[in-house]
Length: 304
Length: 304
Image (cartoon, rainbow over all chains, first blue to last red; front, top):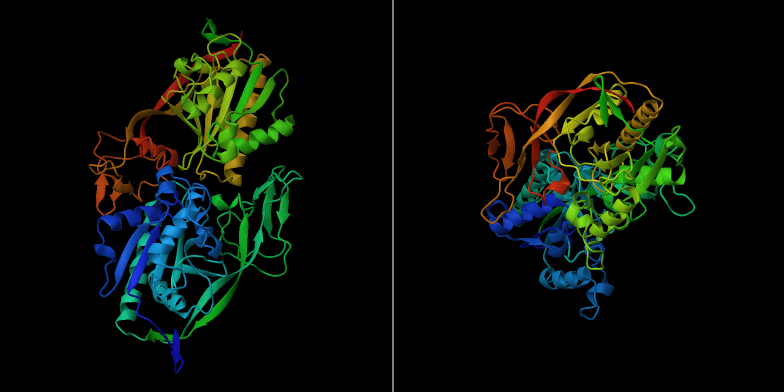
């Protein structure tokens, strides 16, 4: 990226990857990617090479989140440089292969943009996850998609994939693991359509003027109440369940203990919970994530 | 059971088991049973020995439906009489152990009543599953619970557990696998409370007069549309999704193909679909089950 007269210049996005099945039981991305592998017409754009790809085929076959370890956390420098061998966890081997095809991470050979398609059991709607508030390309893309679909932008989660810039983690819910719901499937399809349209326009030389984007920034992570042995002793309170992105104020109900008593939020000021009661986060000791709202400004961008 | 002057007489239900974790990722039953193993006060009733029991602990530990094979289909005579050995699938060994503790199946030593607690990703609400329309004990129990909780009764699925009579498969949804939702948890708790109250009253000698119960009888099983390689090429139609127990008439939308076209129901007459888009039934090639409504008459019952 270079910046001339307040317009950030990015290289053309010639190579775009669409990943499904990074978690093998999140069916929307798996189904869309398999559909596009058979017939890619829907994702073709002028001057763009678009590659749909199933990232964790063994987990997809078993319809499980992962086989040995979470692929979404496997793209660390340590893993990618580990000597290859049969004793490596399956997802670490897979991360090395993906890095070879779509990376290497941090090199000019890496793909320009990667869309990584995910589902959640939380009532989060359509969410684009952004690693850095300085990512003008993704912010501009978000701003472009917004009129077509009511989306939410989450910032401050560490993403760890192989592309140079323009990684976009697209998350849609609520959808149970192992289930394909038509509404969730179609929402994800719409996000991808408009994201690819944006890339085509960008490649054609369109300059995108400065804009502002409302985002939620990750603030804190909340675990379930537990007993001294670490066992969960409460559930997400019915007043909070399914209320992702809605305000949670000090004193509001947060958990319902199994004995019926209520645990209230005791933080300072209003937060906006999300990832509420996500199935995969029980093992990560996380009942929900709190966020704060803020407005980011994306500078103008154009093709270098 | 004996029948005197149109009153069916059953033995006292002295021993009652409550099973959780028959499927290791259905969290309501697992959580309730673990809670009651620690403190059984809530399930104690006069003259009844109530035993809460985790049936598939290894699947619960892995938060997966099963390890080797579906425990809920493992209680066949062939499995129960197979020579024990390390080469048996885990759930077959487990079925043999459960049969030893709570059976043997068909013998007078078997437990009198077993509640087997399940969840579904389908929007089925509270459902009690009944094997036989001649099961007056369970029909009377259903009739007793009904005023406390809006429940549905499904008939005609083959159940295969170890108790003599009074097996009740209690199913509540929608709840994703691996998730505990407070509303689903509390509904299941209410079903069990009233079911145990019913047993206590029965044991005390109360006679339950004849009554009628509206049920849904299993009619047919519908698979997803598939291509010649067996791959699913459609989703449950948005008009049908979450509409368990609602009428589906000839000509109504049933599936939405990935290309957007609609597949309509072409059966004869109105059916009432259920188990719509249940996660665990993709591998059983089942998109939903159709049922027909009917009214069953339960004869009077009392203690022998």
